[in-house]
Amino acid sequence: MIEREDFSSGTSSKSTKLIHGGVRYLQKAFTNLDYEQYKLVREALHERANLLEVAPHIARQLPIMLPLYKWWQLPYYWVGIKMYDLVAGSQCLTSSYILTKSRALELFPMLKKDKLVGAIVYYDGQHNDARMNLTIALTAARYGAAIANYVEAVSLLKNTDPDTGKEYVCGARCRNIQTGQEFNVKAKCVINATGPFTDSLREMDDEGVTKICQASAGVHIVLPGYYSPEAMGLLDPATSDGRVIFFLPWEKMVIAGTTDTPTDVTSKPIPHEEEINFILSEIRNYLSSDVEVRRGDVLAAWSGIRPLVSDPNSKDTQSISRNHVVTVTDSRLVTIAGGKWTTYRIMAEDTINAAVKACNLNVAGPCKTFGLLLEGAHHWTPTLHIRLVQYYGLGTEVARHLASTYGDKAFQVAKMAQVTGRRWPIVGKRLVSEFPYIEAEVKYAVKEYACTAIDIIARRTRLAFLNVQAAEDALPRIVEIMATEMNWSEKRIKDELKAAQQFLYYEMGYKVRSDQLANTEINLSPLEVDRFKKRFEKFDGDQKGFITIVDLQRVLESIGYEVDENTLHEMLFEVDINKNGQVELNEFLQLMSAVQKGSVSGSRLAILMKTAEENLIREDPIPVHRSGGGL
Image 1 (cartoon, rainbow, N blue to C red):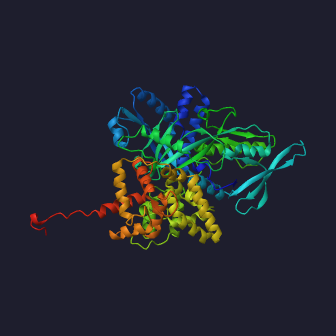
Image 2: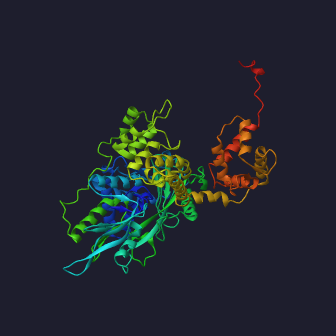
Image 3: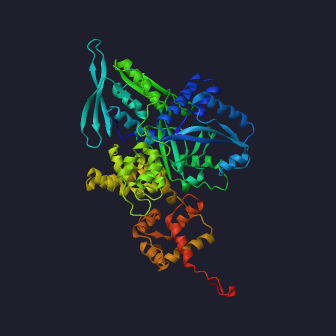
């Protein structure tokens, strides 16, 4: 198996993180009397149960709430969700149930109260998609598969059948992306499982082939964890344009998405501001007015391309089934297209069965992957993290993370963890303070096919998907560790840092996040302008019209604050729109206007300057003489 970039670098790491049958597809099956949609849901629910069983450390149940704001919706959606349970049969995770308004608000306090009549809760699965993808690849390798990332197919090799005189595919010309070396791989059968790039590879076989894939872009955003309860998701079944929006807790954060729009196929899809704002506006419809949904709270955003099987003349991607199709050409190229994450195993089974038949392959027996435990699941238990804490002195949060990521392989990571030098935790130096990823994971990732810094921040850890700024903060240390492990040159180190920063900037939403400040117009009242000018002048002591690192240090020292110079440089750089090493008054007013508007949040400079100003205003001490002088 060859992969042009890293395992799961494409759509597989950019999903909604759900393992589900598809409530929406079941609704379409009944309303349109569509048996194919019904079969898709039944098959997906069967595979959902299997995936939760074979990778219990990565996948888990998640309750999802469907809030109801009209009385007629209660029987309508209750019947639909109960049918979902019924189709799952004995493999139903947990039976769905109805909640009263008060109980719904107790479980999901952020929910909009006005006109709420109640809610329905049903259960689906959730997983770490990139980790699941890698785990499947590692499991295949354990069973004898030869796998390689950063190797692309340049062309297909063909021979002529002496009996029929027809050409047939007998391998591929491959290129090592990192070294440029090319080589041939011979094969009895070649399978095309390239997602959105399905048609590109089919055209290598036959330039005039009819296209069978239609690409659809799905954008997701990540918000802080306080937007949702830790163990309850939310489903908006009918957005303003008829789509479905999920609002799900994941890795202590909240994922919201997705959009569904036709797109061109690219290996580097970019989230756009309109799509991000669409998701935010839909969220506002369901959350309480007490919760201010701010553009500045979007910590990361990404776009994934779904490879939908379609009629090439169709323009409405929302009406296309996510079912999969297996095709075999006259030259014996086997193609698997369409499908979705939940049904990956049955897709593989159908594909291999077709390959066996088309290419006369010898096999020992029928498919054996149903119920086959994946890497890390064999000795995993729900309490494994306790042993990690007790045996190695890891922090509880880190131990839980390692157990739910690596399963029983977590002990190998723990053995590589370095001493922190603190009383507790004893081992496990974090890459960034607010996330449980530790330095030992970078070393371990190199043993699991990680080749670049992007592999680490995006797929071996999920930092880039959770918080682009935290990922950028962790980059230098990640590159430093990888350089030691892989003997990188100084040039390679610089190249890795630059490539990773570009990835965060364009593909993970850093650009649209930073553009919020640059595109904000100053929209403050005269009183606010006067107040913020006075705050600015407290730092600009000699009235230059701008503040520098030196100005910040002078004021902070006067109030007893200690902030290292590198951190101050980072704070200034975040708001220095002109990139001239200083923050001018207009830039500061722009920043404060963006903060007021909500398009920028968590600005370290804005918070630091406000705190410093408050400390500079010395309040009179509370008199104690009338209480007898105190102690």
